[in-house]
Image (cartoon, rainbow, N blue to C red; front, side, top):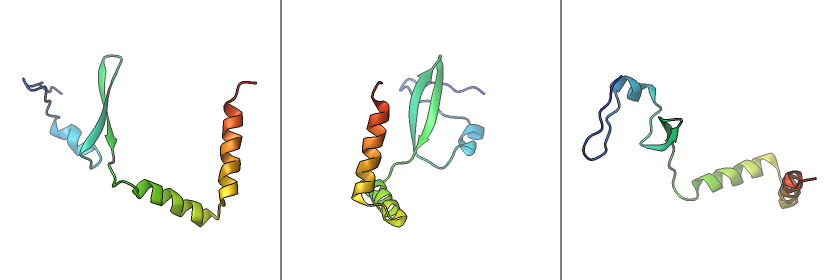
Length: 81
């Protein structure tokens, strides 16, 4: 499929591509080995992801000590031996 870049550096994606993408308005754009890669990005209201994490922690019954222990464990694994 062919897409043309306009004088304003805009590219219109072919309909076949757009319909295959998930419903999103934002994309992370990178260049990989000469190819443009678009990855859908979900934008959420500030604080909503944190609220989701806190809810999950509560549902799992984790305590602040559990979290501190997990962080300590993960940091210890990253240190060179």
